[in-house]
Length: 249
Length: 249
Image (cartoon, rainbow over all chains, first blue to last red; front, side, top):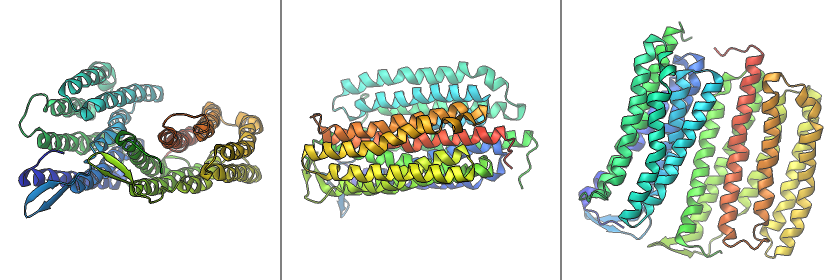
């Protein structure tokens, strides 16, 4: 296990706690706001809350696992020998990353067949991207890490291509009030998700304190990609509900 | 207790955690989506959520029981002597497997008498199937395991027969929008449930690493048979609500 200074330990621990609180709060916001969007956008809001709910569970587990991996006495940090379970992140992403794309597809309100087709292909590509990243994350050597990074980038680039090119007609069919927001949402996916492969490569780039940087980096990326992106989905659902003349009762 | 390598231990532990998160998320999805189906389909959705809720509880217990059965220090896994309680699965199935058939019967919306009759006979057959499987699962020797497997297959085949032949008239009476989905749901039951007797027999087939394969196999089967099947029940309820002209408010 990585040797950590007291300040590194505290920074990481507090980042986990911050992310847990943010994800729980975001979940409650999305579900408590269900009735403020038209019925047809509620499935999108339900899924948006599921993503942050699943992330809350995993950040709680990550925080507890990190806590058990170190003893801190008089500001001296010693590894206990217990495992810091990195897999929680991957298990989380395997569930949440496909669901994030499903949120986006649902809020666009395409025809039923198109929704199922797009949600399935994008969801599978996202799951594949996560599965291909995992062997590199747990590998001891940097060459293996690099190898799986390349493989994982293939489905990632497919997703980017679909969001930029494949959804062009669907985006231009959005009501004017939401068109800009939907475009922004696609770009938030692309930009916030680009953060992950960069963080993943930090150890390969020989960054000093890469362990701390990876944990903090993933936490920031998760907040942007899940809670931040979710707020955008909520704004799209609100704008489209208004455009349809929906009045909450 | 089985000797496990660190990677086997991690794989099993993470599969339990993944299944717990999936079941909790599925439960919330089904219950938060109650109002998006017509009132007559809400009992089916409530039961669908009950199944994944009960499974969440048991996967949490299974995860904690597994955690207490092993000590992991510096990636070395040692059995503590505490019991890994296999019975949680059977207690779970005793509750959830009859309820899964009840979901299917409820979403088909048969006449009241027919619903009660079908739900009772299928539910009892499912409970019997689980009860007959248990003595073999806890038996030390493979002969006893095989013996109870045969007995348990009798109610299983009765259920398959009922789903394929007994429900034929009820399925053809479904609205066109849902007929295909209901047929798919029957086949998902048959195929996902077939997975269990195969996993059960792995130790008899002399599979290397059977302990790990059994735990992972049951987890995958539970996700498909409960959360996956539940999504299908939701889709049927949505399609039939639409066909009835239901509009959520």
